[in-house]
Image (cartoon, rainbow, N blue to C red; front, side):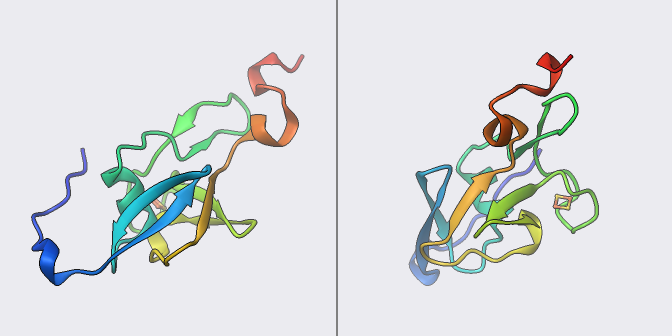
Length: 105
Ligand code: FES
């Protein structure tokens, strides 16, 4: 659905950050969502009730499907510009509770 436009890699600075502990490369000016999509990630968060995977949809701050945790705060990754060394984590009900939502009775 989303595709990075061609850029001249020699004219843009690169940086890196981590997503769930894995290093992700980005270009200066990328949003976190763009960088994660460019790196091939398909799940940015899990829904709190059913634990379904979600990834960016609108890329303009309306849908909240791109929600991630940065520095312990849940933010829309399509609205945050990448910074060198930032720590980004998937928003996961399972990670918080150890229980998959659909397993709760
Ligand atoms: S992709 Fe919709 S709010 Fe970020």
